[in-house]
Image 1 (cartoon, one colour):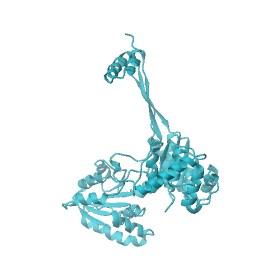
Image 2 (cartoon, rainbow, N blue to C red; image 1 turned 180 degrees about the horizontal axis):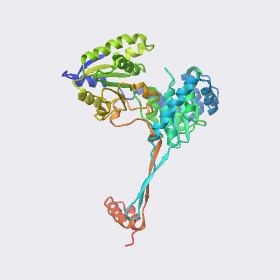
Image 3 (cartoon, rainbow, N blue to C red; image 1 turned 60 degrees about the vertical axis):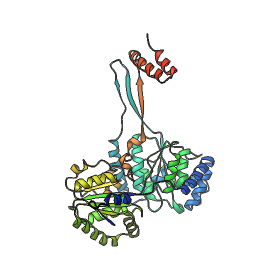
Image 4 (cartoon, one colour; image 1 turned 30 degrees about the horizontal axis):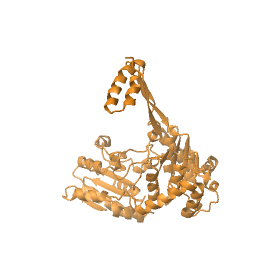
Length: 430
């Protein structure tokens, strides 16, 4: 891992270089995705079957070969050992409970003249959730995307998941059953995103697409945005740990590994206030890496984008954290709730030495779909509110129309929009 010191005159430049990640669209990927999306929009199911067979190595003859029903999902759940069934249900219950607190409700109020104003909250009709199916299976991603939609009141939740070589993962499908997914299509990539966005003979068009994927999925989500809504375009996974030296070094080392093992371009950063403690964590990492099945990925990630930063104190560490705006921030310090008040930008804040980031990934309750690549400066975790929308309510009383009509008339004439002005004036008594 790179070693940075805030007292170095080059620190800001070094930090900026560490965080740099090419988020621009790849022109070649963009071209391929554009062709796939256009083809799916034109040929529907036939194109979807063709791309799935080509890219996933399947042998589907009809679209029915790529569809799973509620009965299929239930069967997958029932095939699992009882301890996995229990874990899925526990995680889903906790995620559901947390997201119920996020649910927005409609409201109204009346002006003194009897004019009613308010906001009406309604759920989206139908959403699509994308679940990765490449290097690993992610049942947690199913729960985190589907459960807030379910809590919001979405009637149809359509899941797409690639099944390379036709191999279906029972845990992923069981998670879909537990989280209330309506139907599953075993397709992935840009073709799955296009099918959800435009609809085919068999795949219903959705209102919004959520969930992470590879570069082709990200490019497809960018392309269809506007036809449908999307949650975000996710970058590599990130963790930032601020440690005051009171947490066992082995714990912090493993927390850094927990994100590094995702991908060679994932980012794990540790900020400490003691060089001796940073050295202790490095020693722990050197020892523990021998036990990691995904050692090569972890080493590549830490070597490419990992770092240890020596800060002069925790106040400075928090300011650095606000600049980094990490996806996951661990405050592995004494009095974490007090230090959390100094954090302005982070996808999720894990407070205290017992709160490993991995608990948030699976079962703590808050959503693990979080802003990456410094976008936590202006965006938020996926939540129930992402599956609800707001309509403004306006009911002007006769008395209110006299006052508001005159104001609107003046402003409309000022914009040279005569019909706007007349529409308000027709309702005036004088």
